[in-house]
Length: 324
Image 1 (cartoon, rainbow, N blue to C red):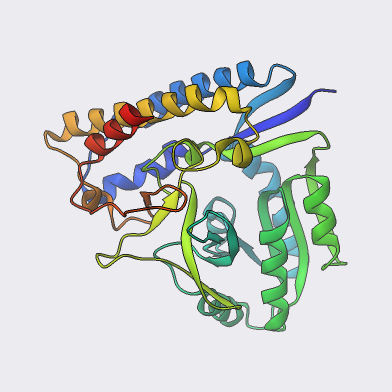
Image 2: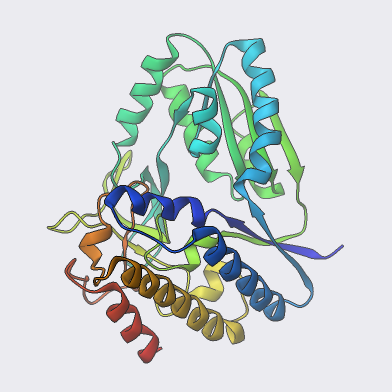
């Protein structure tokens, strides 16, 4: 059996939020379907012995939600998830949580996604929303298991009962880590044994919502927060060159990191050029601030500067690709 490399896809849905800022976009489904097809072909060329494929969140959600609904009916539990695709349809609660990194790109722990409340506030809200009911933790998948484990621990701190944990995709390491802290019902719809890696397509696309590892800082061991500059901009490390150690973060062989990074940068430039054409103006970093999920300004590991939010996105990305 071939080892598997999974690319999850949600760029179309994430970029729809630009419309809330009054920014028109090209046909998102058409643009990102082409981007993803070409990216998959390039990863296949880089990993010829692997089975490389893309999975849309919609392909997972129906199966996961069917099972979650059954559990909800049996327990009257509140569905909670880090993805609104699972929580919103069942009037559940969305946890805006992700791993945060220091200036070297190393993970320092879990904190809120940029633009959202602290984790303490989020879990307090869930406790109030539960009103004594149990919760059902629902995720599209669990790779390392660290985020689900963090959720379980914080729920227990607030004495919130967990009826079940449901994941669309599970991997041995992640599943074992969850089992080490939770002895209740764990439902894994698709168990993948021979995984190379699992990366969302938005991590390859600079200036996409939720792209990359978010820069944060540790206030205390339990309070880790995103870093915002003086103008309120968050910053993150995209999973491509020159921003991050791409081979280490994506499991793509070093020989393919440059051409794939060049392609991703060129695709981001092409997208924002189309946006500029449609809107008849330059698009600055500050123009895409204020939506959730946030678009963070890209930075390199151990950055020597942070971008000003008056920077033109196309101009900056063009300078990056010219220096790559």
